[in-house]
Image (cartoon, rainbow, N blue to C red; front, side, top):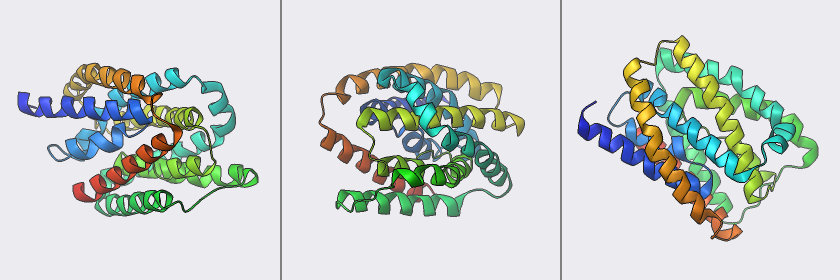
Length: 244
């Protein structure tokens, strides 16, 4: 990577981290499609893993509901692990054009429905039943495309969690998944010493972005926060389609 490319990467890291600090999500899903324009997706995903991990830990610390999230959603989190492995395996074999387009369309469609006030809710009695298929699917798409929010974000939103509860729950899932993803990418020899070095430096703009975004998060109302999250989801969908 030359200096110009690194400037693009680290600027993208900062902007995506700021948005994540503000809304609680979107780091990988926003910066990955941009970075993947300039380098291969197989290189872009491991490049964003460490900064993403740091951003997740910072958000979890800010919201402070780690135990509650693990106690309620442990089955959802664990179910993602075999899905991640299958997704990375497929990525290593065939690539991910179709998956990106489908993910993009689903993300946009779901966000538009919620912006139009079409209520989607899951009864508490069905929450545990849906945890395994949601976790498996989320893990598979995470491994295949690097995107972590579908279908976990729609699932958590449908449970009507409060703002900090939703942010913490999804970032705990992100943290566990990104850790497993890092191990699996190492197994497939997709992580180089150079990528690790660039990734470590990338933590600096990520910390700055998360901190600044977090300062502003509690100054916006729940309704504006909800709209911001859905707009980010639409942007993620558009990025996936364009990048594909």
